[in-house]
Image 1: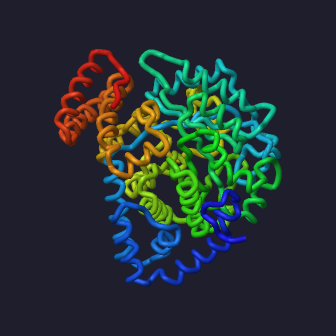
Image 2: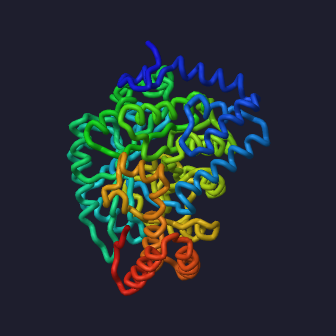
Length: 472
């Protein structure tokens, strides 16, 4: 079996031998300054790097070169995403699950965790709670259980979410993070109007994957790893990949993650819409110290920087698993989307006190959405609630072509300002509103085209008068 980026077989496009050779090569060349400089020069073209080239940068431990990597990652982030940060929240629908994953408290053998599945009425209440916070974009989450959480249940929940209009609130984009499924079911999700289909690989090491998933349908490594190909065959334009760092050697996971991105680009003509970088965290009966592959905050940030350089066009996501301090560092190096005000328990948004008994993982950043928005603006970022690309059909290869050319900024920057204005008027505290109004006035001047500036000013006035949901 040989490495083949265009193969549809998991063990050929995520080839164990190629990954191990890549890690070995990177270790051997981590002090090869001439090679590192050539890779950095190539990266400056903003067209990405191969998994092997990026692995060399990750392995490099020369302080001056690490600084160059960080500076380049920061510049590439600005070039493609400006100073915008998109905000979203997870919505947990059900923690019923038939899998035996060793790192997740939803595993079947956990008999003391309360099992809960939201009714449609409870989904509606959760959505109203999220709308009252100011959210416009959700990522729905559910355990894998064909009896309790069939595709029909997920589709019904999506329909309910989109149907709820409360005051000025509306969820404009529903991303879906559910277990690997069939082409037919992916078509149903596409028809339901989902945004991005998200599925974490957890680990690309097949041997370790099968140990970590001893029972349940998720045990099938090939079926899980090939899910994105089925999703794209089912018509889903935007897919999001990621690994759970800490389950295996981070060098192995990093190479596998980029090989997956290369595979999607080679086969489907479009890479992943997003890459997530979660780390194993404590949760209920899960102790992250049981895994031997934990990585430091510094290495975690370096991984993000190298991903940003290797796939400059792809959105990067960081969740409230991480502390505010880590999130501030990693945003600068490449992250473009973060969650805010998150609750990782089923039905958690309707509870006044944060419930812990059904959490999938402990939340490290417990700030409210208003506090996160305030913080982002204070450190120079525009909090964006924009969902325009999805609703204007700028998905898949159309989005990527606009992103790679830099033209997407002509839409994203104005849309960020208009959705921020909505948040300030409808949901923000007085202090957040004051900071936000000042930021909007400053950022209007950064819109390159005078005509667009005029339109934005007109629309901001209309938002003041009560109109909502303008978009470029």
